[in-house]
Image 1 (tube, rainbow, N blue to C red):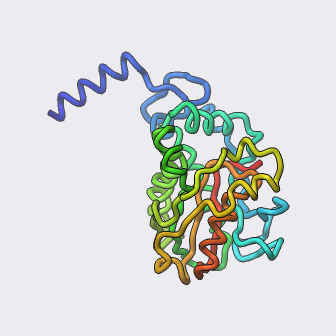
Image 2: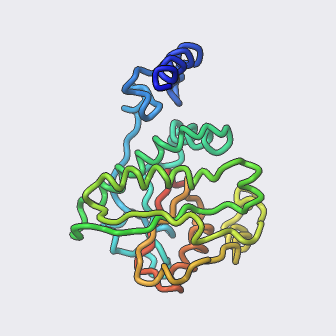
Length: 248
């Protein structure tokens, strides 16, 4: 059976060779791990650091807040203006190329670990919360892109020494109210109003005193993250970070 699978893989790769997600060149065996050729991988660059979700100002550390009214701190490796990052997110979200979740999670994990290396804390523990979709939207799309990214994030972060405890809760928070897409909202206030009271916490007993990382693909106005962070904080969450692949 193992030999048969190996033969089928050789045939499949010959007919449908794995291609770089960006430039579509045929990938070598080592390059297939992240679905990028070596040349395109070199085009990715990011700086370490956390950001204020209100003004996007870079913060000196994970314990510092710029706008004190915010319930969370933003962590994001790329600006959405980066054309390659835009393309990969689009492939995942709208073209259903699920393999794009893995490199996004890899870049996000490396960025987060690099940033936390400078923190005085010796080790961190956190629960990852993927931003949920309403069940009807997830059924229509066929998957939740934030969940796919989160699954790979747990894999990469567990391999590090910085996180002594990292896990994921995919149903701790659910989207209980169906609302029009946030991309259809033209202003900050309309985004806030559109998403208000859309989420529900299913297990309050697991929140108090714990740290959480809310994971999504893109951070725009932050309205969705604020609603989730608010639920976590009023139920006793200690620290809340938002980790996204890109920020506008």
